[in-house]
Image 1 (cartoon, rainbow, N blue to C red):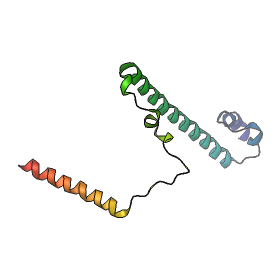
Image 2: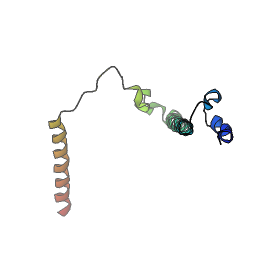
Image 3: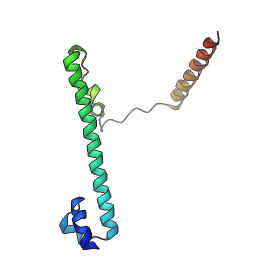
Image 4: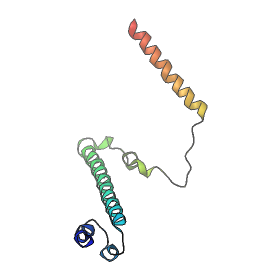
Length: 112
């Protein structure tokens, strides 16, 4: 059984020299992890390609409205060294109350 799985395991990204020392469970888990990593890389590439196409559309059609790199690629703005400012609980409550008040106001105005 392990001999039959060998070509598929190597094709799934498991190093040939490590294969023979692994259990079937380890082989399965490693193959699934390799597959997931590959899919994540493809998703990442698709997003970056899409962002690039958006920038190209701006460059061709409206170069003066072209957004900056930081805006298009939001992950560039985040810095791991700087802690994010936490919103206080009272501020979250205030925002929620304002949303509810706006919904009530809109409902009242729609009845008139």
